[in-house]
Image 1 (cartoon, rainbow, N blue to C red):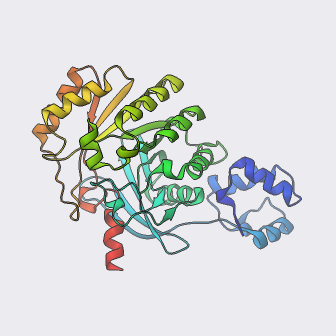
Image 2 (image 1 turned 45 degrees about the vertical axis):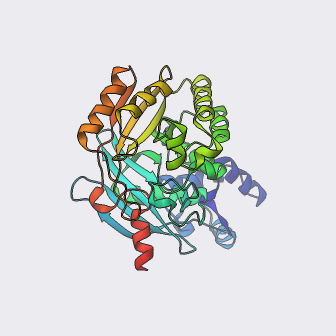
Image 3 (image 1 turned 30 degrees about the horizontal axis):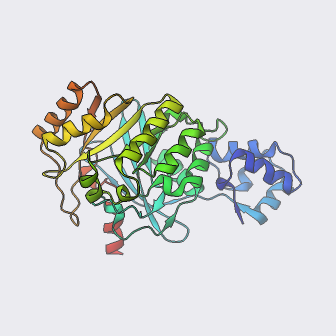
Amino acid sequence: MYNLKDMTLEEMEEFFVNIGESRYRAKQIYKWIYDKKITDFDEMTDISKNLRSKLKEIAYISQLKIEARRVSEVDDTVKYLFLLEDNNIIEGVAIKYRFGNTACVSTQVGCNMRCSFCASAIGGKVRDLKASEMVDQVIAIDGDYGKISNIVLMGSGEPFDNYDEVMKFIKIVNNPHGLGIGGRHITISTCGIVPKIYQFADEKLQVNLSISLHAPNDELRTQLMPINKAYPLEELMKACKYYVEKTRRRITFEYSLIEGVNDKKEHAYQLVDLLKGMLCHVNLIPINYVKEIGFKKANNEKVMMFKKIIEDAGISCTVRRELGSDIEAACGQLRRKYLKER
């Protein structure tokens, strides 16, 4: 059975041609799926009964079940657990900003990157998500939380470790006949898979790129993020500079501040030396506490000191406001708790 949500518009056009139907049927189906959010072929009233019967025999339209949802009492963040067709569990988050509602989407079940501060890494990767399973997260959040205008691929998993499906997902949600979310409203976050950064730069998309950096030198970054062994900072920075030169787009560097680990004044100055002259923005993140890991967020005084050093060097910098800390909104936390209980 074909899942129609796994198809880009071009792939769906070819699908209809291959089953002896007109190419324009793809846009009709896309409208039912992504505009009207219909998953039952019988409700598609401008499709002939014969075609509806044919589609029911060979295809289906997936949808995710919301297994659990937790609503923050502090802000308007909502954490979701979604049940997949194979009974795996993934997470999604809805976040309210002044510029609109954002869906934080997972790209894998678990993660193989083994970043030492991330709950998603505990237990490793189970499998990649299909494009449809990413699309379904956005649709489910949109239906429950309210109109989604922004997407961040910052949930569980490493997007560039599932590159082809992530690119297909972007084509589907970006297509005006799909969800119609503009590229500038989509952000991909990667821990630094260097060959994929070059490949992504060559895609010439308007999609934003965010790099999970979290340390300003190789020794510390390798301790926190094993990916640094394969792609040390010198290689990563070359790839980032290539991306900026190729796309003329600014990169955001995510830096989670961990008490006593990467929050010292010397680390701030090293970060300035690393990024000076690049078209970039630094997003400082007071890290969420994960019981199994034990890291604690840096205190506010350290955060403000770090921010001042970066800004004084002429580098744009913000501190991400803490969201969903009372509902275990950080990647992997709620899923891990659910699996333990199950």
